[in-house]
Amino acid sequence: MTLSEQIEVCCLMEATARKPGNVHPAAGFVDLNYGDFVQAAGAIGAPLAETRRVGLGRAVYNAIEATRQESGSNVNLGIALLIAPLAAVDMKTPLPAGISDVLRHTTIEDADHVYAAIRLARPGGLGQVQSQDVRDRPTINLRDAMVLAADRDQIAEQYTTDFAFVLGLGRRWLLDAWDWCQDLGSVIPQMDNVLHLPGIVPWEAAIIRFQLKLLADAPDSLVARKCGASVASELQQRAAELERHDWPARLTSWPALREFDQWLRADGHRRNPGTTADLIAATLFAAVRDGLIEPPSRQEIMEHAARIRLAEERVSNG
Image 1 (cartoon, rainbow, N blue to C red):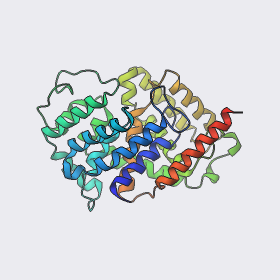
Image 2: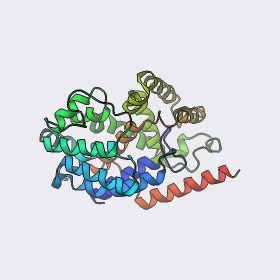
Image 3: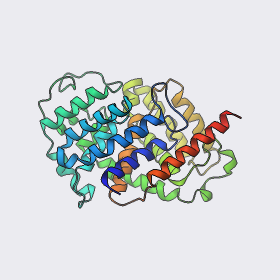
Image 4: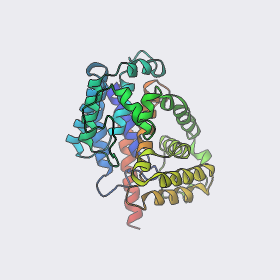
């Protein structure tokens, strides 16, 4: 699998897993659907795979430009910002050993291109700051610019810590979930009671379990920007309670998962934990790129998505 293919597959896995609050094959928003994510995944792989050659900032801009041409939506700005530095590490070097060098050599030009990409994507809840606002031309390198946003943005925080979470605790949590969910028949009780996720497969269950762990660990910074700290904190508390149900092992965890999903979607899509989804895609890529997990093929993912849509249609039709 090429680097471009790895990026596409990881984006597709993240988008296809039926995570609470996010877009997936059986759930969309008024202005965003699963097809947008499929198109974006196909658009983003090649530009990000060129990061080492064209430069970090340029690769992010090219990825967002390609995405806008395909879907016209802000689907993957966070994913591009997270995967580009990882994709810039020499393929012969493990990510934890190479990421520091990539980030240490970011430039003002990288920051300029990233600012342009952010303006092009027009993300929600952006706000305005006094120093190094994305509407202005940067005067510092990209990593230093990220330092200024690290206290309010989980993606910027990764730039300031050499991706400590994605390449450390986050990746360990993903691998734990991946291993734990390999034999779903032994961990999911009474399959006839989980019809709201019919046909669930091990890699999908692992991603959902991983999402719950992330949401319980820290408030989603996109939700915090859009809805305020109190809502983000409530989201974290609800996720922590659901995690204590040990989804998917306990029967009680399944209606709790459904309730959590309904709560996340109750206010339009303002509570959509989008930054957490970006971190999931990046952590998946970090694990696949370093050979720690074997992902499904693109064809397998799309076949699973088709089965999800068919099952949803059957439920809707009674």
